Length: 210
Image (cartoon, rainbow, N blue to C red):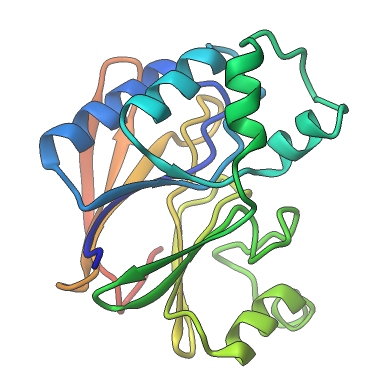
């Protein structure tokens, strides 16, 4: 059963930053490292990103950018080669994982909808019209959901469901990632840049962030 996790948000070809995150994970030795997809379409090296994810046995799902690529409508030209393309094409939209603190759904947006956004400040109509989130809550299967898409780091509780968004490695936003211990109910945010990883604030998972 999984307890300690390193969570990686939208990667977008940021091979150098991804390498720093996975070096951190190799040193901290979590039970698993998870990635929410959107691996392609970025300024660095998508092929290197795929190789790193494979080498470190990262559990990943596809994002909308991978779906566009596989459907033949990529946002940017894909030059990483057929082996990388085949690996990306095999990624599922969601994964079910069992943890010591209950079932976890790994996805890109919300559930199987890779375009659904869920932001830290969503309230009122934005939440009421988020049918993918309401479906997950109504089903009552999952205690945790790890998703991305917005590039905005977030921990929010919706009844029995806690949503974790580790943010992004994309350089134009606020590159970082999240490490959690579900058994202890705590985690820590990290910043990451070209030079390496920097610890930021700890967080109690029951309280959330920001």
